[in-house]
Image 1 (tube, rainbow, N blue to C red):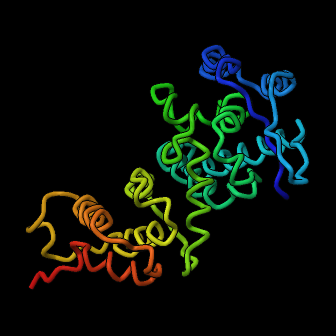
Image 2 (image 1 turned 90 degrees about the horizontal axis):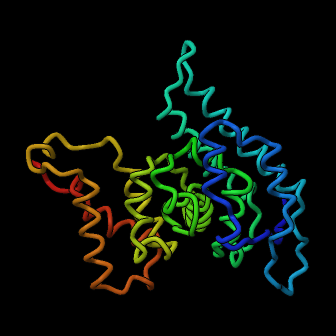
Length: 260
């Protein structure tokens, strides 16, 4: 799908509380979505590029793509009629990471606008957002634009960063592992730094040396990320390639220590 101009809406028009009540009760239906999309209270950002404005039908196709991912994730995590909800949500994240840039064909400028993601999340996909998270994290996950934590936007930005990698990695990371990098702005918005960090996390998963637990009681990535933050605060890393940064960063990982 080619890039489109997405709709934006101000937070005062979202009617969030009432829509959450509908979603929690199971009444946030496709008809609810259509009714919300037909409200003529949105705007488009002015632009000189030739991209067309997104239509209601195109929004409904986005909804179908996301709900199909949800269905696939649940089916994959179902065994003998029992759904492993944690596994289903993790698989949903993996599938969304894979397809998010195609599902949301945004320009970089519009992807950085709060109102665009508020419209998508509340008007189009609130029921899926509530399935993935819950009402206790509305501010971080559903509205506003926390690029590290937003239920949909976080994957759009993460995929963009990982696509810039020199090594075309296929990450299979837990949400907490992604957050190790992306909740630290001084790491995550330089693609070379971010991907070097992510590659280290990927390459050290499940590979604890036999002497690690006797030396450390804290999780290895927490020990390591503190060293990386100190390094990035003391050194200018822009001149280094991603591969060179990877070599620097993995040398700081506690798994790289001599346990002999």
